Length: 345
Image 1 (cartoon, one colour):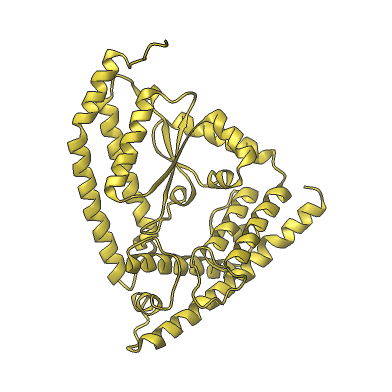
Image 2 (cartoon, rainbow, N blue to C red):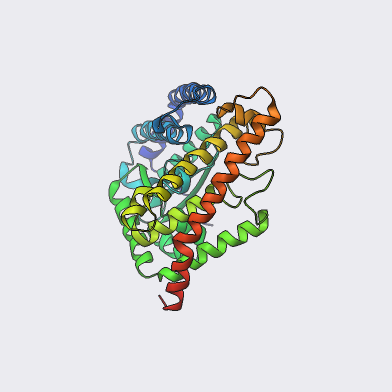
């Protein structure tokens, strides 16, 4: 019989210290809930907002603060292990680019140089339990650098999520090593292959949800002309040019200045719609249904007393924005994809 392996004495004492730190973590969670509610209330009622005041821009940093504080408490309590046994915590996807709706999943990658240590496992368990208690849905994966490299060969979704990565907590050298793995993978990937794969993914999504920009009850995130199409455009520009902003696309002559302005306006508009929709529904809901449209319109500043009238004006602007995004995605990369594929790139 194989003997049961227990952590060394110093480790067991550290884990007991972690358990004792729960009161501090609970206090952090309660403070986070208060700040989140303040943010929700401000965003729900303030019609005029600057870019720094958009919910989707501010909320990720509120989560950053909570995650770092909990991880720091853990590191102090589990000091017997030191930092070498703990993973780097890397934000990816929407969390990586610091854009989250009120009920978005928070995408986190726990990165290790090798096998995950006992302390690393305990840290992940502590964070997952804390996020659950805070009402945050965490979508986490734990991989070594070698496992990240392997996954990128076979998983387009995982590969795409790594385009948007930033270190939230942990050792910077691990992030630099991860970024080197990402850079090597993309350098060995033919541009035409990646572009074609992402555009095929987009076409499949459009067919599934209804291949029209004029759906009467659109999904703000997934429907044609919505947020996911904007994100696809930026994923492709990031892959090809390392660009993540509308202004950068002007410098690369992918978009004209007016087109970039339209792209940024649509981006802000759809994110505001999505956040207000979820706050009204009080859940993760991206479908702009008939019953939601009047209230969301009111929160966006359409002030007609008649609910149907303000919903009609709001949806007219929504469809205009969706149509503009459709134009921009067509002119930006579809011709490029055909050209690169034809050239064997």
